[in-house]
Image 1: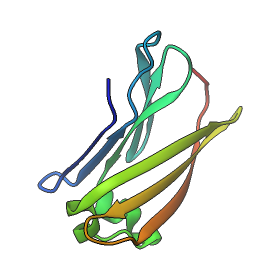
Image 2: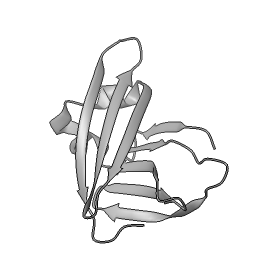
Image 3: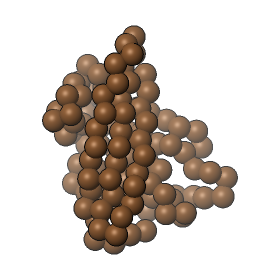
Image 4: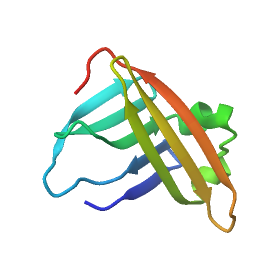
Length: 111
């Protein structure tokens, strides 16, 4: 599966998925309020969905018009025993401007 990025303006949901390697599959989700993280059978966070994205990302200066005009978004997930730290970089179309966001997600159990 290749990387995909989509923003549903009507429902205000942003989805970023990095795809799976050839030897892994979907294992489950970590639901952390407005964040849903997709975890693979190798324990990697391969996808992020942000519900109420404009409200959730407002503190990072990510505006609705940026989400509507996304050219690319990249994320890395760093898994720790009680949290997952997401580093996301948003890139809007027709600009070289990048907006970084760092989000810490507390988790009770690791995949």
